[in-house]
Amino acid sequence: MRPIAVVGGTGPEGLGLALRLAAAGEAIALGSRRAQRAAAAAAAIRGRVPNARVTAATNADAIAAADRVVLALPYAGLARFLDGVAAALADKLVIDVVVPLAFRDGAFEVAPVPGAGSVGEILQSRLPRSRVVSAFKNLSAEKLRALGTPLEGDVVLCGEDPGARAEVAALVSAIPHLRPVDAGGIRNARFLEAITALLLNLNRRHEAVTSIAILGL
Image 1 (cartoon, rainbow, N blue to C red):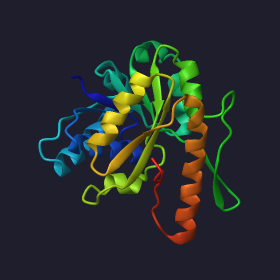
Image 2 (image 1 turned 180 degrees about the vertical axis):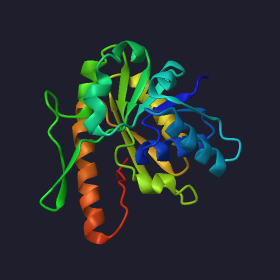
Image 3 (image 1 turned 90 degrees about the horizontal axis):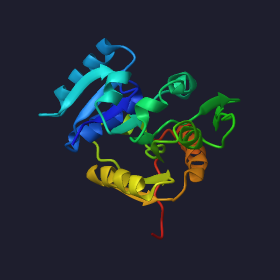
């Protein structure tokens, strides 16, 4: 199987996910706008995960090498990235971990998403030939990068393609102690993004690093 591309793989969330997926045995094509930054991040992963299968590339080359693509870009750069990338992402599984956050009056909130209720909905609209699944949005980048500390909680999945959701659920299950929860359609991504803002505000208030678990399932 071809590697998983992590676009924005040198940022906190992208690097954390790449690290955990590499530790779970997945091959990773770590992407960045700058190949040198990708190479440094890939070397750091190999230093922490013996026998990790991680290669460094530009974002475009990482996408070309993969059938599964994690989008871990900052929201501010997403619109520019999407211009002209639909053909490159056609027929691929696109895993959306982007959260549109703003900080105002001492608290985090979800920034307005023009023309849609969530980043996931924007992606599915802009990438009509891709299978978009929003996932991993509520996991702390700090905890992802703390490889010696087990993760805990649920990863909620939203997307229009049941098969795509099942593929992402398998990736979640490969990371110890995480449980995938299938939430159905992509419209639910707007609630995932709001939960991330809530968790960050709880973290600030209680000096903690929080996650979510869905009870009753």
